[in-house]
Image (cartoon, rainbow, N blue to C red; front, side, top):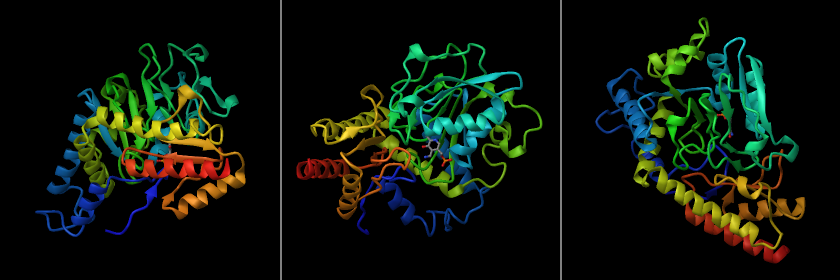
Length: 362
Ligand code: PMP
């Protein structure tokens, strides 16, 4: 195999090697099918089996109850910023949104094009370095839904548990931490995620929606933007992203083979603790962006004493086979994205490099 480097990219991101190996092995011809998954009809029996297995493995993995539909859509999480309010925010109603980072801000901007939005709490004044405390929340008991972003990919903050909404449907943009730890799907009205971090390639978007919410969609929505179309046609109204669904299915199987979400959550916590340990143990050389109780196990953001040192850090890390460590331009500094498939050996390499870099320049 061609040598692989350590990929700290925020997404598209590292995928499990056994998944890549299986996809490569079967790319010319799926066993028993004689054609590539890229070439078979989405209305064929082999593809029926692929999409059914992907759904079954996801259901098993996350204990997704029968009350919730699983949809494989396109348009990324960004299209869900629009589809959620188009379907679930009726005229005259208002939705509550938590403003905790760049992505929830985008979700709010799109929702406001559709209907009324109330910001339940904002940490923008703190440069999105922390989550809002319950005492800061203003939740409307009549809200159409409450939207939050469990993991803010850019700031590197992550909710430890979902907010309590007293029966108001909870909608979550789980793009950057989906299935990185156990999740009680029954507590959610809608979960959505672009696949390209923890689930597979870009181009497929996972939506998990509680059945009864489907009745909310107003008549006259564009066919493709109506959750009912997608639910009724089992994601096959038009040509779905077949390759993305295939890979997502392999990733779901891989996640089950890792021992499921509890085991994956434990491994992710241990990996993140190692990097945070290197930050906290650096005597102030590295400064974490996120406040202690808000730290993300998926995207670890930190600064160095100066921007030139940050540039040098990224350049030297790249030379040592660690790619994608430059922080997002809006935050600066360093961001290490360490999703489910990111290997422990890569964490060891980063921590070793960080320690040595701090020793030389601290
Ligand atoms: N939400 C979050 C939390 C994200 O991290 C991203 C992508 N980085 C998006 C939404 C946008 O996703 P997409 O590119 O799939 O539209």
